[in-house]
Length: 328
Image 1 (cartoon, rainbow, N blue to C red):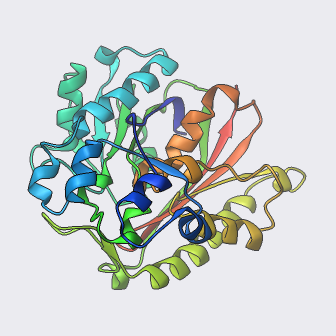
Image 2 (cartoon, rainbow, N blue to C red):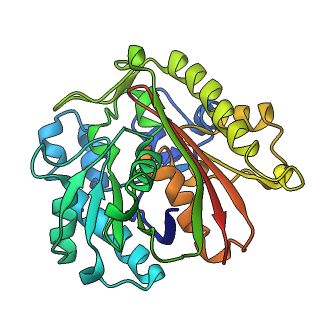
C-alpha cells in the first residue's frame, strides 16, 4: 500500500484578480467571471506589467518575463513536502515529475527539479495532463518492492505562460501552482492510498490542447460535460468502497477547473455541506497541481479518520481517482 508521508504546495506571489483582467479591456468584469467560473483571483509566475502591456502575445517572451522556472516552483513545493514528511533530500531514491507545460522537452522536468534540490537519484516524467497526480500515485502503487524507500513526486504547473490574455475565455481560468508529495510503501505516513484508478478515452485527445509553442485551447462545452460525468462516476466509485456508516462523510476534492463544474458534481453526488473542499475561487485552475494543492493547504488540519475522494479529469482525455485515508 502506498503511503503519503508529506504533501507540499507553492503559489507564486503575483496576483491576477478580476479587476486586473477587467483593466485589460478584453470584454470581461468581476460579475461576468464569477457567474461563469467562480474565480476571484489567481497567481502567476509572470511579471504583471508584462501581462498588462503584451497580454502574452509572444510566447517566446514569457520565459524571460517569468520570475520562476518550473524547476524552482516545483522545488519550493517539494521542500514543504520533505519537511512535513521528515525526509531529507538525500534519502529520496526516485523523483517523478509531470505537468501540462514543461520548460523543456529534454531533460525530464524531474531531473531539473532534482538538480534544484541537490538530489542525486533516478528521475523521470510521468504526466497525463490534469490527472497527473492520480496517475503518478496509481502507477507507483503498482511497483511494490521495486519502489525505492522514499519517492518524491512533483507537479510544477505554470500555465499562465501559455495563456492568451487577449482571449477572455482562457484569461479568466488559469493560475499557477506547484504540488509535491513524498510517498513510500515501506514507511507509514499521515495518509494512505486505499484505492486508485486511472483511465482514458483517446477519441477526445485533441479536445484540450497545448501545442508546442502555442496557446492553451479546448472544446469547453464538450470537455465540461465529459468532466462532470466522469468525476461523478469516480466519486461514487470511491464512496462505494467506504464503510456505509461513514459514506456520507466522504470528502470530495475534484479537478480545480471551474467552480460551476465542481458544484455540479457535488449536487449530483449529494455531497454533504462542508465536505466539498476546493481552492479554485482564490487560485484559479491550477491544472494538475490544483487537487493536491487543496489537500496540502489543509494538511495540518486534516483529522485522523478523514476519507477523501480525489477525482480528476485531464487532456487525453484521461481521468484518475484516489481514495485517501488519513490515519494520523
